[in-house]
Image (cartoon, rainbow over all chains, first blue to last red; front, side, top):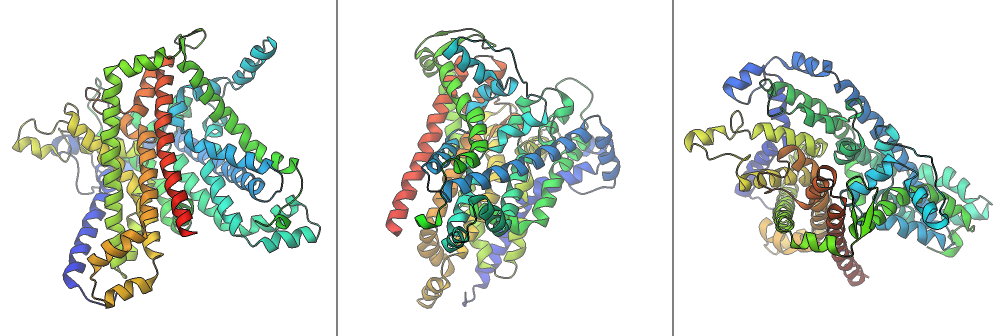
Length: 296
Length: 295
């Protein structure tokens, strides 16, 4: 605005600086302690200034049995979910917007209702399904025909089991639906007039137009999948299938045991938060766009 | 959308929507139905036998003092968590918008916390709040035995609420900054010419203008506080001390996976689902009313 308020400006700037201390404080603390030695922390408490042992702590953590696996698992699962979710959300939204058939309503509302069913409220039965994918089929067959099936497919401790239940999403479908509704209708009219079928229109016209949406949603989905904790917790039992966000808790000292190595705990935390931080730092525009897009 | 812009074909949309619908049926609808079925049956620990018991599981939960303790923890957690997230994010967004030049830097840095998973933050804060080596340790040298989040329920709840707000603020902040920026500059300029200072404009123009987005972030936070707070609780307090942070989402997991009480856990799930449903319904109704008023 035009007018000058030096006092207000100074005060708000101080508050902003203070809030930055709170916002980045935990990341900074992790960095400082991850660069200290174990003795240093046990004697002087948590480090408030960086020291010079970051490299050796990081390599100590990375050499510990499972951290390499965890990082790999997090990357693989996040990328599978990103690819799957983008494909599912864009095609479902296309089905829900660009057709005359009543079925588009089924597609839309069938997806919409999932908003009311977060993982946390169906965690135990979802685990049951993942432990035997054919269980619904068994139950239905048994109830309707009395037949008993003897096939089962256990998805626990597999990449499929870690990623498939996270793939379907209402928010992604909404994001694409909102976008498709802003695309001028003349485009699809013209395409139809030129004799293009729905798939041709989708692939040749709509997909190239939605590049920005793919980038935005992809960034958000990557971050949320990387940060996910609850599903990996129940869907994995073998240590080498753990993801980074889950595995971090195994670094906390147990009640009995050797003196805790806080510097290594914090180094592991640093490793777990670095990749998403890089993603946010580099793709901020897409990321912000994804969030405000979902928020509309 | 005009009909002439839509494609014919009955089965194409079905085929396009089918993959997602199949996954939803498998991982959303079926588990929900199964949970509903479990909640009306007494199921043995591994789910292989069961007998119908009607509403007994619900009555058992509703008569259990632990349920009310957990409900109370959830209410406290949600109220303070959502309140803190929205208010802090709103004030931050307003301050950032006041500073045209330096605002950009703050806007960039203040969303970094979005990168930190709840579990990672939980681990960091658990170390940072440890009475022996943590930041609050000095309080204990002034008042011996004051800071004990592993024994004191209020302190544990404060930590969990702080962690929750910390993870939610970046999202709220981004949405609210975008909302503030979408207010036409003329309104603000006209108010400034009429002599309204920045604070007055904030209260009388900016807040009323972004009310829909404020409401949106509040309900998103509320739903997240009911459902998405698991990682924080699991890494920081495990529901303790003495159940002080045993919020419903955590209790469902504990009862189901550790207590192996599938029936009770399912009855709780259904009750929690009703809470989510209520929160979403309120959101939907308010948005519909808003849309009608604008139309």
